[in-house]
Every structure is written in structure tokens, then in C-alpha cells.
Image 1: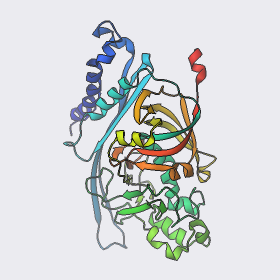
Image 2: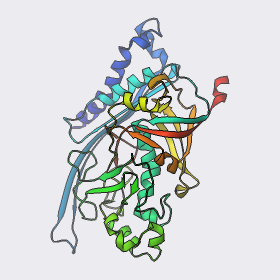
Image 3: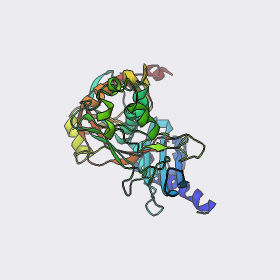
Length: 386
């Protein structure tokens, strides 16, 4: 690509969002004339990333030099109508330029407009549908790190001693599929020169596999305390510790030769069977739709399983199985435990959309997930007096 083409790709997404704002009847109803739209404080910003990787690896242990090449194109956009305290997000990913669209910009703008008139929700325990971005955050920061062989070796996982046991609802399965054709995070070989592939992590709620590289797989299987850490004899667990995830990733920039091979997911896939957003909201009945969260992190260390995250956009009250009023951004915080979350899953949507974490290299093909009970705290009430 020429430099100009690279820049134009970013503007393609931004301009798509601006066009949605400029033609919105809802926004025009808030101002006297089109020139005053600027007074609403319209913001469109984000990232468009294009990354092509070419790598080769050789070793005395390999019969020949191995090579791999991959391409990914990602966009993540946030739009705001500041005067109305509304925010929306959009995201997209592709492996080809022909598959890249401006949909992320359009989605972010539409979601920002839909979020106008947000309401506050009181503290309580709610049935919750987690939108795709929220699912991605919880998987990336809380669940998937606990499925790392190195974290098991360090006795830091919330799932210690649970290999082969039920750790989640039977509705939930999670797979890391590093070689699936057409998925954005797919690679041919790892940075250890080993083949990527499909690793079942959670199957029908049971913990059946861990993400591993060669070093951590061997170290854990030779650990004298491995049986206590895994919950099974390590000799019986070799199939759960196949090293398909040893990559030299560096701060969201893809592979980097100077970085040691760590353990990294590729395409995190969560299969489901609920056909639509409308159907999963009907399953919940009355509750909340949490579309986007941020500042998601474990409380009291990863092993404790407690986590928190702030609801920042794309969220709604669910009434009688339908999306109702938008929720005002930054007025709710999730305070929950990963075991309650996983075991409380009552439904998983069929469609998984590629969602992105800033400065991360994996792609989560996140569906919407319904959970029976989630504790939500109302926050920032003082802002109403300012």
C-alpha cells in the first residue's frame, strides 16, 4: 500500500461515521439548523490498523526453514454526542482489503445516537445480556488468563485443580482456534516453529484444555506439584497441554524477533445457538443489556476470581424482553466473581463477531451472552450536582 492509501483507509471509516451524524433526524431535532450540529459536541475517533506479518524460523532441531505469512485489518471506533452525554462504539476485522468496510464508523455513530437520553439504574443484582465488546473484555482480562499453562504453574489461576471438572454452565464452550481458515487471528505456525491448531478450553462447561507454549507445557508436566495444580496426574493431561500458542507478540504489534515466546491466544471462539439479539433479550425478560465496558481487571488477584468493570456505552434497560431506555454512560460498575459469571450463563448467541482489545494480538469472536445474576453498583451520583 502507498502511504496515501493507508491514510485514506482510516478516513474512510471516520467519514462514514460523520455521514451518519449529518443525516440523523434525531440529531437535527436537537438543533435549529444543520450548521449547529457542531454545538452538540460530535466526536469520531479510534484506530484503523493494518498489519502484515512475514516470518521465518530455523533450528538445528528442524528439518528445514519454516515460514509463515498473515495479514489482518482492524478498526475500532468510538463516537460521542458530548452535549447529550452519549457514547457509541463500532468495530470490524478482516484478513483482506477487499473484506474491509466502513461499518465500524457507521455502527459507532448509530450507537451514539441511540444512546441519547440515558437513564440511571439503581444498585442491584440483575439478569444481564453482555454484548460482544463486554464479553470480549471479560474473556480477555479475566477468563482466558486463567486458562494459561504458565499461570497454572504459578498457581495463579481461579481454576486451580479443576482440569477435567465442571467450571461453567453447560451452555458455555470456549475454543482457541489458531489455524481456522478465514479467521482474522489465524497463523500457520507458532514462533516456536510448531503448528497452530484448535485447542478446546471449556467444553460444555468442563475445563478440558489450557493455552500453552512448549516451555510451559514441559515445565508444568515435570512439576512435582502438578497433580495438585491441575487436579489430575500430569501424565494423563498431556493432550490438554499441547503447545499451540507460543508467540513472540509485543504490545499489539504482532510478532517481534526480540521478544521471548509467551503464551498468547489467537482466535477465541465461543459457539452458541440463540439466533438474535431479540431472542436473547426475550430469554432474559427483564434486566440489563451491557454493551461495552472498560477498565476491566481482577480484584484481589486473578486467582480469587473477583473482577470489576465500568459500563461505558451501548447499554440498555431490558423490559419485557425488549431493549428499552439507554443507560447513561459511566454510571454503573460491575462487581462480580468469574465463577458466578461462568456458572450463571443461561444462553449464548449464535453469531460471534470479531472484537478487538487495544494493544492485544488475539481476536475474540464474541457472541452475546446472557447471565442469570450479575451484581451492578450505581456510581458517580455526585456528577448530577455538578
